Length: 314
Image (cartoon, rainbow, N blue to C red; front, side, top):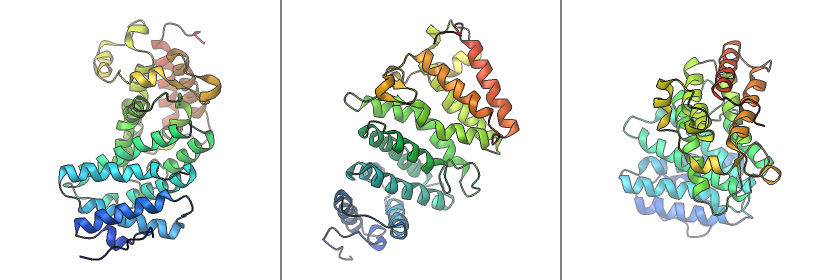
């Protein structure tokens, strides 16, 4: 078994990806110690090497309980770092490595990487909550997701569609969990947090991707903000059945705003829903939006407004 350096130096990838579990565990522990020191900064070149090692450290974990524990431990590294900007740089490394390595994951391992992504989504929300949803940090997070090598980048052919689908599937659920597990959380600024999906929905060249975003994220969120019992019950029966199981997310409904938690505070769900719909309309009107997506976004805006019997609730 290779001897892992005991100091708080940045662990080498060969220790993180060792075939020996004890070596990997010690490397992760040393990494946590290294990251907890605010004076330690990881250059971009070293970040890529580090995340390659971490990615294969997780690859080597082969028992369900070990996988679950390691996924949580890796995600919690985001919160070990005291500087939010440094944490976001570490997060960027995670997403770039995930996009880069995703297509090489075999079907026997894919579920555990879906779990890892879920853990990082949740930890990221808790990180942003810790910073009280500081606008500059939310904007940087958005750029991490939609920028080059980001998992929601609309024009990077290297980004696997299945990764974007999974993020859309779990995004609202994990935000609700993060709000539930944080004492006295600041209201979640949905306009900022949904911005990467607005961008992807408007610019994706794949109709399946657009449909997934609308069905897995936009529609369940709107239903959560204004439950069926409050919107007059005017949804078609088939849609009520499909969305009824997803119309939960009580913490999002009770503790969300549009863009500024301090000045807006928790907003009424109907008002917030209309602000988000207006944002969809604005983005659909932009020149960069694909024509086919523009039509779908206008249709979503019009249809959802028509489902609400009170169009002047703001």
